[in-house]
Length: 598
Image (cartoon, rainbow, N blue to C red; front, side, top):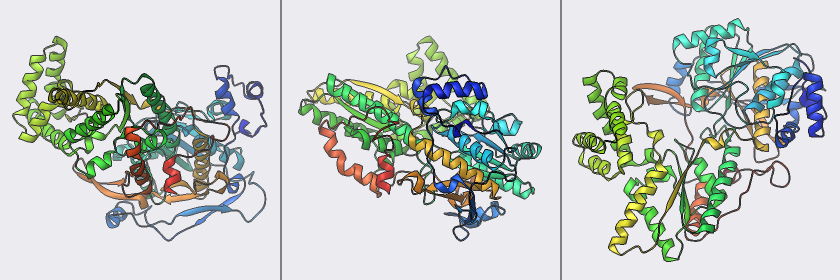
């Protein structure tokens, strides 16, 4: 593990290109000027991480947030551990020669901006500790660990990824390490590579699996320490111990720019409503943050819909009322944003989906397995009907299903636009369930609002115009150039993960706190993964999980939004967000979510 290029005094893009070619043979001609500029960025971090440090106990042993007895029984080797904090070493100067470490790292789940800097921070930590250390990157996520597919991480193959977006240095995947066979295979890989540590970069589910693996290895008396790093653009891996997951900052800034652009398109053309669906299936943090940044005319928060038991028709009426009020002011344009998981929070849709799944399960018991139902049953009928353009056949199938539903669910199914009714009834996943995540809720709402407004026109209560354009802003936010915050945060988390491994800690999540302050003032350490766990019922079994953080309606972020949203609804107080900044006064701006929470 040689000296890293990150420590060299580059000042210009040309220096990066010339030095990288001369020293490492790296060719960077495909990098844009901005990407090259980002290679120059030196992530900021607490001074304690720049030299020798120790890891000391920072709390009493922690219990799980709930169901502690069950969690303790399932994780006897890694539960009831204290928080730990990194502090200055008693000696002076950096540690340049220490025990060589062998560490593996993998990405799990969807990408989030900043992931490559976790690798960079970990690599630089190992390189400064001992040049004989080795870092292995598992390819394609957890499956790479299970199958033993990896690459050696060197400065030659890492440098071009520093401060860059994406996970493509290693790739990622959604395989879960949970069966005994998978755990044994993962452990075998760790043993074969003689790993001192394994870093798993992922969200709540991935870090739950990391804890399961840490327990398995500890039980087998293996030496590999397993450390998690909090990643998810959705922002739902937050709790009393973790202030933020990386990727949220960058994603929200990218989405906010796009929504802001659409807002000014709306007020310029003055003839369309933009319906924008944003990422966030289980929580509405992104929608809430983007609302605070852009001031849309309406932002629908899933948690509020659930709390007030708002049905689909109620939400449609709410939007239609807004359109009518704005039309009375001569405004036939606007912006409405919503999270992708909205429909799953509506009680009537939830009931309909549950009933549809029951109906399909009954059909599957006749046709064969649940998977057969998706490949041989209703999905086949839908494919055939769509291929033939046979609308009557689709209607027949839907009516047949509706007869087996409760009156409320049957009425709701009948009120849906035909395409969505077909999707709910016939588009199934391999287990035979409704694929809720594929529902284009922004288009569903736009079409139902249009239908409601037509009805109001006939009744004489609406005389304006309504035209909708729908957008799904999702993948655009996952792999952009990371913000300064995410560059700093991820680099720090990588160093912290290495420090925890060096000190023999396993079953921990790397963390930094005090994130609203300058990075030099952050406090860093680790929290036991089991401290964030509770039991949940999943697939018919009680399962340990790290709970997702949803929008707290009594919290300061939602209350700030609630106080201001009425002013945004009828006026056009849109904010010009503009592109994310890397230099200048706005480069280190934090999200409203973080600033207000603090």
